[in-house]
Length: 285
Image (cartoon, rainbow, N blue to C red):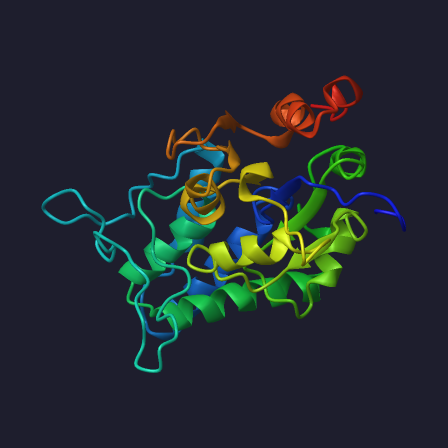
C-alpha cells in the first residue's frame, strides 16, 4: 500500500476472522455436526448441533445442555486457565475451554468436552467441519463478510496497516477469503495464531509487517474481534485500543468500545483511523 519514498503507516488495525470478518452460522454448525458424528460412533446421543442451532435462533448461548457442578461452574472448565505445557514444552491446548462462552465455537467446544471428547478430538472435528464446507462449496453456505467491509478496509488502509489474525490453518484458507470477497483486503494474514496464548507473538509480527526495523507501537493498534480473551485482552494489556463485537450481548471483557456488529462500529473505526468524515455511513446496515 505504501509507495517507494512514502512514509510507512504508523497505525495498525488488527482483525479477527470468525465472527468478525467471516460471518454466518454454518461453520459452527458444521463443527458441531462433526462432534455429533464422533458421539454417534461412541453410542452417545448426538445433541450438540441441535443445541447450538437453538442458541443461534434465540441469540442466547446458555443452552440447557450445559452441565454444571454444585457450585454452578460448567463441568470441564478450568478455574484458572493458564499456558499449560506438555512434556516437550509446547502448549498442551492452544484453545482452552472458555467460560463464560462468547461465541458458537466456544459453546461447541464446551459441550464436546462435557461429552468426553479430548482437545485433540475437538480440534479434529473443527478442521473436519471446515473441510465439509469446502467440499460442499462455500457459495452454498451462509458464509459472508459484513456488508461494505472491503470498501471500509480499502479506505482505512490509506492511513493504517490492516492485518488479519486467525487460528484457522493456512492450508485451504484462500477459498474462504475468495468467498468473502476479501482476497486483497489485508496487508498481511497471520494464520495458525494459536490465540489466546499466541496472540502476543501474532501482535509482534503484525506490528512489524511493513517495517521490521521500526515496528508499529502497541499503543497505535486497534484490535477488533468477538472474543475478549483471544482477540483483545493482550492488546489492551500493552496499551492498544480494543473494539469488541458482542453479538450475543454478553457484556464480557473491558473493551474501549463495544458493538453488536461491524456496521455499528464504522464511526469508531473511522475516528481511530482519522477518516471519520470519509467513512461515515460507509457500511450499510
